[in-house]
Every structure is written in structure tokens, then in C-alpha cells.
Image (cartoon, rainbow, N blue to C red; front, side, top):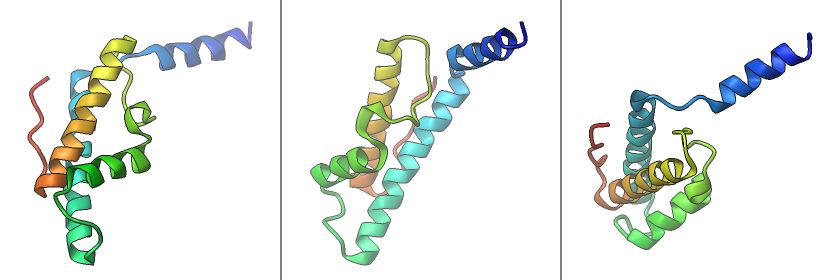
Length: 106
């Protein structure tokens, strides 16, 4: 019985879905990180700030693409993938423009 209780707690913690606020926080972080990368590239003269392909490549390299462990679990594989795609899009848009892209209401 002692082993089953911690396992049950762990399973419950792993299966919980991110709240809309947690999802929005993730998206805001991705947008800010994209803008931050733009600023770093610009200040260091590395790459071409505003280049979409470079920004996408940086996202893939830094966060593992859409399979990033930073993407909060939403509930279903489809919903998780949609949130990951939205985070990627916000990162790239922010990286290209140099300012955090607005996060849509959840």
C-alpha cells in the first residue's frame, strides 16, 4: 500500500492539464524569448535579425522544436501540438520583429 500511494500522486500530477493562465504564461515566455534573441543577434552582429529561417532554426535548436519539454500538457495530443505550434509561431514572429508578439486570450 505504501508504494501505491506515491505512484498515484505521481500519476495524478503528470495527468493534470495546464490552466489557461499557465498556457498563456508559456506563450508569453516564448514571445519574449523570441524578442530577446532578436536583440542578442542584433547587438552581437550574429546572423541576420529578422530572418525567419534563422529564427525557426534557433527555436528548433534551443527548445527542441514542437516537442519541447517546456510545452505545458493541455489534455490531448492534438491540443498539446496546437499549443506547441502557437508557441513556436510566437517565438519566430517575435524573433523576426524584435518585439514580443501579442498572446491571444485563452
